[in-house]
Image 1: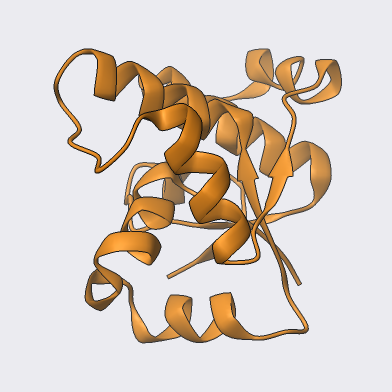
Image 2 (image 1 turned 180 degrees about the vertical axis):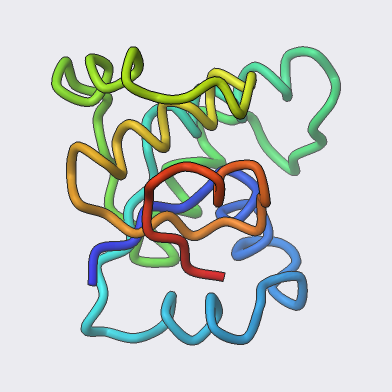
Length: 128
């Protein structure tokens, strides 16, 4: 299974794994699954850090790749195909970072690992 992490899921996996559901935690450590982190999530982390809304123990340019590698998470670029799914999405969620994650999940046939009930309203496979 190919799993795309929501930004909060990545942050919890790294710093507060007890916040993950049992199903999500189990899927994330299963060696049969490929776990992916979108460049959009790295961007969101950098933006929130810059705005003072996210405290990290080091700068995002070190934190994201170091923790991604430490947890065996593969980076996922934002590509044209994924962004062009945007116009097909119903307007159930206004967060642009979450919307691009949905687009990437749809374009790549990925399951999105998220607790967000708004994202679950999209036609995308959810793991939580």
